[in-house]
Length: 198
Image 1 (cartoon, rainbow, N blue to C red):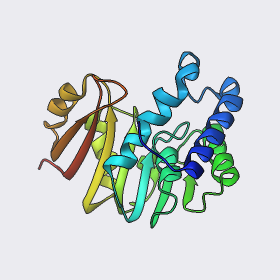
Image 2: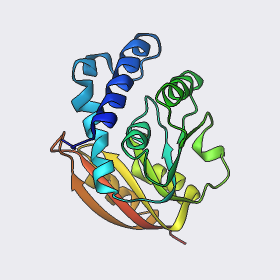
Image 3: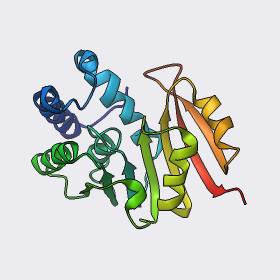
């Protein structure tokens, strides 16, 4: 998977240790995926850091949950000129995110414990989300928060093509799919030019 620096690897290991400690209490990831948490969750999200090379400006992660993908990308890109805003309405999960951001010394990370639909537009250059909502609903959140020339990185499962077809009934958008390296049936969708029909 992604080649990361020694310091980044140390922070990722610290993140995983915190995840393992918190997960029995608030179920950040499915318990049966904990044994493979590095591969299934961390390496999965590190693909975004590789794809979105040299981003600048504001990055908004919608429905961050246990930190996927936003917190992982923020760890990998902590030396880049990017401010990460992680949006997570579940107060217990947002408390976990705040704890990790503080313990890992990530001053470029801000947590918003609110619903993405309720927050005023954030005009983000980059938006990410993983397993949050069907694409037609997700694009409404993306359109609300993205700059006109911004890019969305949406991590989707095996039905991503069906979701794209359904979303095109409501939305115009350009999509470039990248096959996931951790799940050959899944894809990372690079989406630009989002606008509603009519």
